[in-house]
Each structure stands twice: as structure tokens, then as C-alpha cells.
Length: 271
Length: 95
Image (cartoon, rainbow over all chains, first blue to last red; front, side):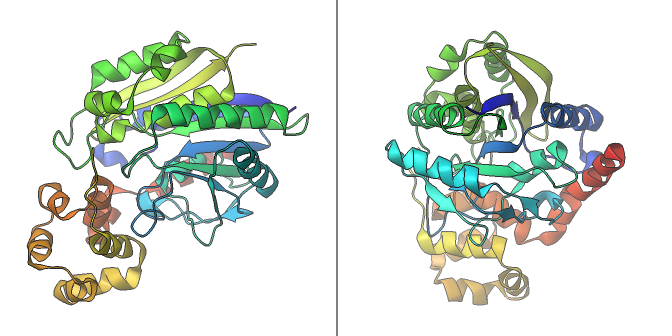
């Protein structure tokens, strides 16, 4: 069986430094996650996030998708350098098949149809500035309605974890990372607000290993308390569920900035 | 949380965010692009003064509004984001 050697959750936006009150804190926080990913020495990073209508949506709405391509070219939004990164077709094809065998029909994305946007490529830039580490994007449609329910996301995440632990070969080292959030109201009533109290409650549940409290949330509750962008916490919860029992989390930083509750945590797994 | 997306409007927004040629044409002659995508009078009025308060009424989801605002005005994007700056720092730190 393969091993989850690291699990992380992190926001995924980065503006020009001049627009931030605490740019170094955020840069350092993202960099620290990157250093920890590198220290875990993974063979593959499975990144759970969502497209921002830059690839999917419009003519097609895909709730769940696995990026199966051999390589990935970034969309290039947020000024992410357009430079190829390796994918991991064997891992990704296997995951898509395993999900299908278990009643989750996730779409398969090739690079012709999907250029990962900032949701994936900002964190990957910090994880792997050299563009050498294979990564598999796992898309969840958190930005377009209907958003998959948290309970469905949890079912899918449990299967992702099962796939890593039971199907992948022994010795393979896997990092699982969810990216996005925390609270932000994007282009809707409340635009620009940040729900610091709710964000801190979420972070405290991760820190105390109380994933059950997070699993008990509903999309409607998350939407009400942390905005439409706050639904990206689905990706964090999925990462925690997929990675395995979480004992606690190490909060690297929390900073309300750029109209968003930005944060990064390392999930500490039960041994 | 019910969606009222309008497919032809979504298509225009998506093409503007993805396609440099459509972006350029939109900047040069937005009414021609509105013609191309079949926008009605209400939709044209909304896109005349684009913001989430107007665009949500014609079926543009919030994430589409942000994409449209940025890519219909590339100078905004270039002024706000430069991950390349951070990429250079990371590579320097990694060396």
C-alpha cells in the first residue's frame, strides 16, 4: 500500500505584494507549506481544488474530475508562469477507474481540455518552484451551482483515501492537499467581507482533530457563514478525509487579506 | 442558491476569459461581440456597466463576473497579479 506522507490545506490566491498589509507573512506561510511538501519527499501530489470558470463551466458543468494528463500547462491567471509541470497518468487513471468501480463517475481531464488555474498552480509554485514534482489535479465544482454537497464530497474523499492506501503500490509516497478559502464573499452581497470568527472556528476544529464537526456542516451553512468563496473549505475537508484520521493540525498562518480569510495548515495524521 | 445561468451569456464570458482574440475584439467593439453572442437589450444594458449587481441579473455567476472584469480589462489583471515575481523569489531561495 502507498503512504500518505503529508496532508495540507492552504488558500490559493496571491496578489502583487504592494496591495497587501502583510505580504511577507502570507508569502512565508505559503513558502512554509511548500517546504513541508518538499520535506515529505512525495512521488505525487494529489491536489483537490476547483476550476474558476476558466476551463470548465459555460457549456459544461462537471461536479468531479480527475486530471489524468502526462503534463500540465498552467492557465496563467494571476500571473502564474506558463511553464509545464509533470502529471502522473498511472496514478490518475487508476483513481478515475477506482472511483468508477465505486459508483463515482468522475470525468477524466486531459491537458487539451484543462489548463489548471490559480487554484492549483499558485500552491504548486510554492510546493515545487522547479516544476519537477508530478501532480494530479482533482477538480470539484465549488464555484458553480449546484455545488456537490459536503456529504457527497466526503464519500468521494473516503474513496480517494482508500485508493491510495489499498490500490497504489507499496512504497509510493503521496501528498494530499486541499486548496482554497477560507471565507470570502465573491461578487455577491457582502463582497469584500471576511468571517474571521467562523474561519477561526474552522481552524480550531482542524487543530483539535475534530473533523466530525466539519463533516457535520452543510453547504448552506458554510455559504451563509463564510460566503460563496467560503465553500472552498470543501476542498480542505476532503483533503482531511482522504488523508486519513487527523489528530490535529499545525496552523501556519491566518491573515484576513485581499478580501479573503487566508490561511495554511498542515494536517497531522494519526499514526 | 439556485442558479439562473444563461448559456449564451456564460459562453461569451468564458470566451472573453479564455480567448485573446475575443478579448481584443471586445475591447475594440463590444457591441459587435454582443451581436455575435446574441445578447438581448437587458443583457446589453447589464454589460454596459458591468458589476456583480448588474451581471448577476443576466445569469453570470460570481466567478464569471470576476473573470470577466479581469479579462475584459487586461490592465487590471496585469496590475493586480504577478506570480512570476514570487516564482523568481522561490527559485532564488531554492538555488
